[in-house]
Image (cartoon, rainbow, N blue to C red; front, side, top):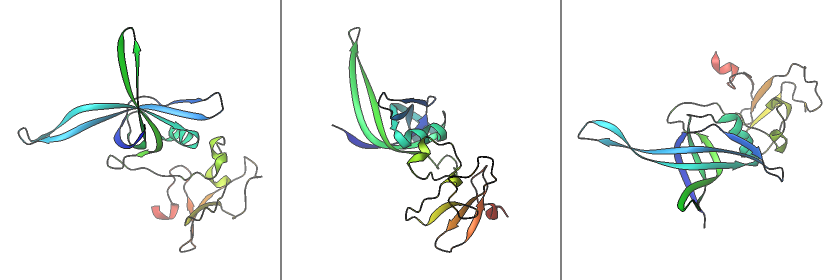
Length: 186
């Protein structure tokens, strides 16, 4: 039996990335979720119990977890809960695992810049987003500055990532370092 679960917590371990014998990318980390409540008697927030989970992501999600999530960050995880138990040396152990469907930063604790990855080839490629453009029906696209398909471009060629708003048709250049729109900084 598996139940869907959403958990807010902190990343308690380094991300462990690997590949299954079948060639599927995986990433996992330990997640701690601590109950907090306000104690009126002491006029302070106090920590309650901490629940521990092992979070496991596969394929595209695994690659995105590996390059986005770091130990100590606050995250929100959505996935299927699995409870496992085993016996060792006469003692029974239990673990709660989450097969993640989605993992993201908890914006209650800070801000984040999102970079949309396009296509299945992103998993293996370390190329910039500008190198591939996809029209997936959404209102936003990343295209090279000249609007051409840049798959055959030289690695050393000067490329600029552009944000095109389909609703207004306006194109704005994206800062490669921060992922922010350059016009927004002005």
